[in-house]
Image (cartoon, rainbow, N blue to C red; front, side, top):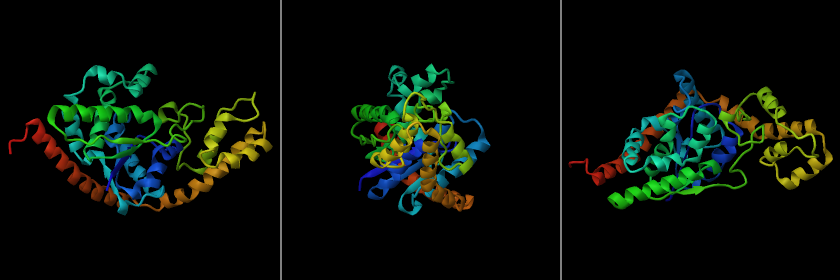
Length: 312
């Protein structure tokens, strides 16, 4: 059976961009594969420096996974930091990759251009991501459009290792749903926590209303494009056409309709999420991380033999 892997950072509350860009596509397809879903807590350290907040986020993101319809009995949900082979492989791959190769990464250059702290972890992010994927002989990785380059990096890095040491790693393929690959935020830019333009996935009804009402609209047009681009994630464009025709210039009515449509989908998930205890989350992560490490350790043993550090 082919393998599927994805992961999200517990760096803050999930937003609808995370849901449509990665989580929902994963939920729709994971049953067809041997699937792995990672809590990317080491990746989160590049931006989050509050240990108590990180602990809470790790528990919360697993609740998010399960509330979104993912059954932990049908796949492996694991915590990145509990599988040390991820960081071990990262060091090995670091020795094959040049600085100039990493300097071309769009995500790194974007953060640097915006004046954000560009720590070494952020610079090396693509290598850790490659390790996350390659350890499991992953075939398919569902990601947003903004991660396409990182998947290409993963394929390049796997190729470098295979050329140097012999066929070892499978080259993964990105699964990108073009209509949801880039989810717009409240300001029309890509939805991102770093841009502070997100719509929370499991926030309160009041938080949802506040974020929707903050969506930037163009008073010159009949149709608020930013509202519409988000709305079509929840209803078909043919279904939305009469609503938007009937409310030309009625931006509040359209925002109210968007709130109702989001709540219809997210409300039941929010209730399910509230019923999941910390104890249940810890059990899911413990069992999943043990299974993930069993797989990762086999691949890492092969890597050690290939590079010459194993003396057995």
